Image 1 (cartoon, helix red, strand yellow):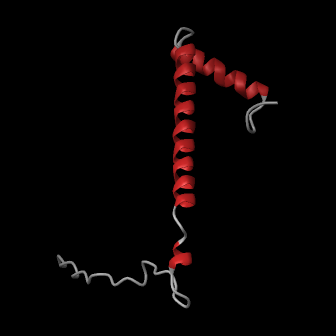
Image 2: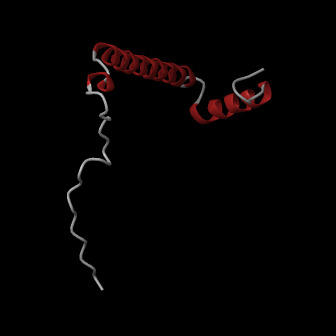
Image 3: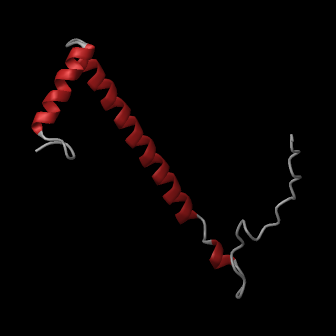
Length: 90
C-alpha cells in the first residue's frame, strides 16, 4: 500500500534516488520544507475558503434584491468598447 498508485517498491526507488541526489544530511531538511509548504498552502486555501463563505453569507444574494421580472446582468449584457483593428504589416 502506498501513496496514490505508487507501491512500496516504487517509493523505495524514489527514496534511493533522492538520497543519491541530495545526500543523507539534506533529506530531512527537504522533507521539513515540503511539509511546511504544504501546511502553508492548506492554511491559505482554508483562509480563502472561510473568507469567501463569510462574504457570501454576509451579503444578500443579488437575485433577492432585484425587482420581479428582472434578471442578473452578465458581462455579455454590458456594452464592450469597440477596439480598433490592429494595423497589418504586409
